[in-house]
Length: 446
Image (cartoon, rainbow, N blue to C red; front, side, top):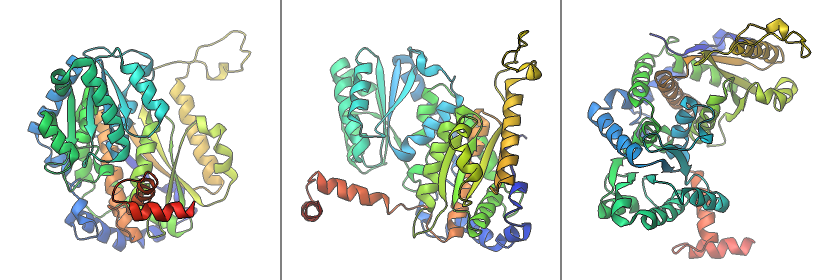
């Protein structure tokens, strides 16, 4: 069985094997908390056994719903924010043709767009203008139905869809992914008769990509969600034991050893532009899970070799508080050889006949050597290929490692108390009913 592999040899100039081994007891205790629900936030551990507990009946239902949307729509807008958006976006972008966004969606092969991940007036105006002549559908994702960003987007797009199609037809093209019983979206979905899927109470947003939250948009985009789940099941089994054969255990231990050695910033590096949004998903997963109680590794991401021409100088010669985790993709989907040119004005004939990816791999290796020599420890994650199964492995690997690592840091990896602060201020400034005291207090500060 092919699987992702974690290599930590390039951290040894900063932390020793003994430094990492010294964390075995803490990592074992953390893994036990994740596996058995004995730590803080245990009410949000429904993702741990989620892959193996995902039923064929659920996958059949998701696929059938996706096929109905694909048949009837040339465009489907997935509305959500944070984990209700980033996971699906990451997988769809990774698996899609790089230039798919320049091609129009058609019924049978719709374009999946996203809304509700910002409060951009221009963005929403331009989206609605784009949709005016489209046969579009909506997937709205929210436990409560009242989160500001997606609620605004859904109100606008629901009104537009009903205007373009009429109430009855619009209802057939709206799917709600929400709480089983509670909340404004659940109530609306019941009243309107929308097709629905449930966001389980014990799965937080940033761990929800392998639930209908991520699976339905991914299936609408035409990708194999069964293979995605199969890969996650494989990684669920591989990450069960507390030993170095468990890649999530090894990764969590190593990054905590580096944190203890003063490496406070982790940069996720990819050398395949299809993985850009995996970096965005990963940043939310780790930032929201670990950044609390004045602790936590700061997650950043770069796309190389592109960012070697922007961030490369800082990484090579800047403050030595960083380490890198590099995702290397072993096999590419396509082949492209570099041609010979008789004039050779660009001086590239020395690599003529080579695959483009061979040059990319040497750029990757040369950069890793340079950065390690420059005092930047590197963790290397090798992914066999960008395919559904291996992306499922990668998702579950990072989720499991995140739970272990957060507990090792001494925080609750499954809450996000700081996220509520901006909301309270925003509601007070907008004079939301029920926030009268907060409105008075915040206006006194302005």
